[in-house]
Image (cartoon, rainbow, N blue to C red; front, side):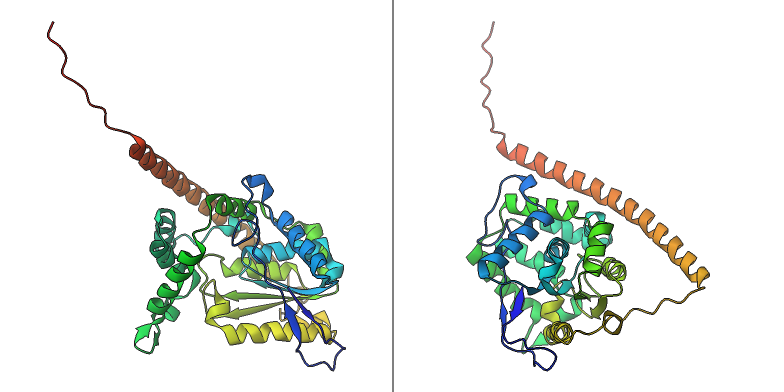
Length: 327
């Protein structure tokens, strides 16, 4: 969240921006509830609103990344009158849209993630989920970024500790249950603020087509901004993302018209064939998504059973059986 302390209208140069970044419940130094029911994007949006109240900020530019972007959507629907602008980075619509693209790479990542027990193992997995392959293999001096970032990740995870099971499972539950209703979408569209959906094309966690679909639903107030990069496109394309955010803030302060802001093709009347084709494509995508979800569910069941079986075997203690006495 950010607030411009020097805002004085259209002639204001973007500057003097005060920023507040928070750890959502379940991670960092924030509260870690033990019940899954205490985690939802709506509940966490209310946490963020309470923080606004604590800071004394009546309004703010609200930016969210990944699950944070889902929370930002809920926040914008709950208090649209307190939103100056909304940036959704690497966002999805929740539910089955949280499932990554099903291929060999993501299956390998999922298995490695579930098996990761040490900072070293977790760091290796996180790199593949956060960045594009090209970015990791680029040389910075004598080492690749993968080598440099791996050391930084291990150091960071070791210092802060692994996320607790309660926090991880609670946040997964929040993402899985997240859904923006038509009424909530309409509240954002009519809220009087501009929206940017910013995404990395190589994101293996949040597929870009879901972000495009959400941005389309938010027309005419939303702009879709795409960069070459992974889930942490903010790290891969820092300057470009920062510029996109500053453009959003400046456009908001200049009271730019939504129709001048959005970059989606203008809809024309009488394009029935294209409309029908789009409808068929969406129905096909829904069917594919359901098959995808079913396969992911089967894999998760297998991994859960495997994990449970392994832990059960580890708990078994050998029992010494003495020789039976002769009758």
